[in-house]
Image: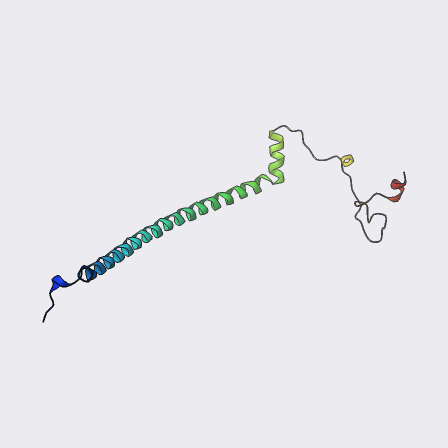
Length: 124
């Protein structure tokens, strides 16, 4: 014979309904998390594209500035700019040029010319 449902406990009657409700909440939570995650991926992708375009623009600008800098360092451009600013600059006179001998192993007096003073100067 069939059992009387009035004699069953409340937990047994609401158990399947609670399990179905819990499953619905889990599925809904997973769906909301999936949509949120897709939104984050889209937003990060847009940020990456913006940063890459800014990097390309800055790289182009850097290349232009390097080319301009190289042009300004040319002796002709430096001379022209010195004349424009009336700096009174010109080539060095022969008396203004100091030539230093190249140190060589054969010439022992010049081996330490930059590292220490000659012995005669230390005694004074």
